[in-house]
Image 1 (cartoon, one colour):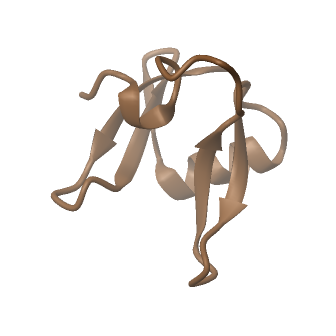
Image 2 (tube, rainbow, N blue to C red):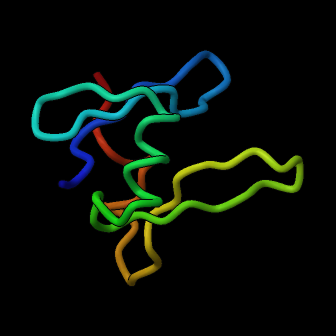
Length: 71
């Protein structure tokens, strides 16, 4: 499974992701990523303690979640 598109709120936070044409809320996507079911991402924790998805580091910025197409 790989994230194809993202949906963001007015603050620019990712709220939903599209994987294989199906939409998942961010909490469901975090659970899938934690279980190793989404390739190319990992779960990180903000200073506030909130978990979020993060692209695995590589030399390309084009596959960063913030740079993916929106829906």
